[in-house]
Length: 456
Image 1 (cartoon, rainbow, N blue to C red):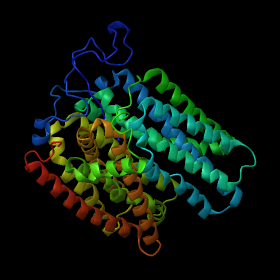
Image 2: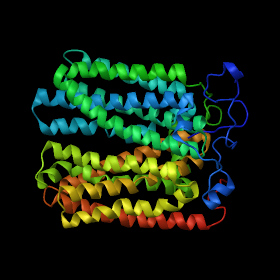
Image 3: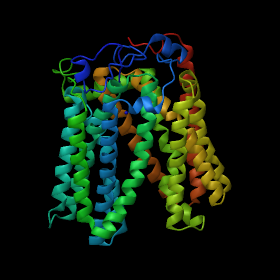
Image 4: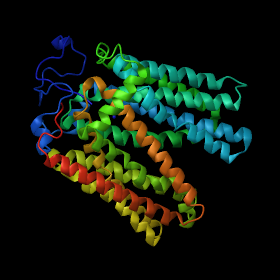
């Protein structure tokens, strides 16, 4: 998925000439050292920022607006590439299996890239990593447009597009705390980015299908390349350059040793490990996406039902994230992480009774509302992450989430071939609820132990 505001001007700020988004005229609400989490905030589940923060405060930061726009374009571009290549492969082969494999190939690199390439955003300036990632993806997509590229080449290029996107995502997530701080403004910013991601995915899928249908897949790829180029321009023009946080500290460390050190950091500290595991629970409550087509068929619906089912959970998550981040106090958010995580999975057990379409949609919306705990889990994770390891930690967390979702969805899809999709969803929810209970118990135990979350 992190950033700090100070009471004083940022280095290099020239007051009226400042274009970094620091807003020097406005008194800042907290002045924590960058990447730090205060002792009272961890021990009591509080936050260093006390004044009420609004979404207007978040969007008042110029750098955040730029990152938000770049994210919107990049995610839409990702979905356009996936849809366009999937359609292109199917048009050439008429094989549903190969089309499905093409779509999976566009997802798997998220894990590989998150684990093996996220360190780039710690070793080099993060703005430069984002720009290079966008330009690299733009170039790869343009190669896809060349006539005569074989299918194997297209699939390989799509794999590389997604792979290059991993360090971009880690760098952007690591820059957010520098822009918004690690207090309540970051929590609201996280809610905005989560809902933007969901909206951009839906818009990208819809636009990808429409553009491919009206203009053909090659024009879809041209538009895709343009979104990446536009994202790079926005980041270059509107995001302030910052030095590489780990350029000196890890210069002599080998890449493999750095990856191992990053994994050790995340898994050895409960303050990082537990919020990350909460994030990985998304694999269970997102299981319905893996069986959405057979579920819609069982509910006597067609393609429209598939879209409505997919939108139900997204609607719940969007509404929940906004309400949870805007109207729930920071200490209460941390206390609710465990119960909401259990609820997001446990509610799916109601599918065991095989409700109709209206009942299924209500269950999915309720599960999505409970999934709003991810906002607080993300904030807890970034607050406890050392600034110089932030990108690598985010890459591992995001890669693990992607891998877990892929595994659970594939398993759910295989099980739905021989069992009712509704029962499969219920089982996934039950398993997820048990796992969530174990993680929540660990979370509660850690927060009852004084000093457990303090950094060594």
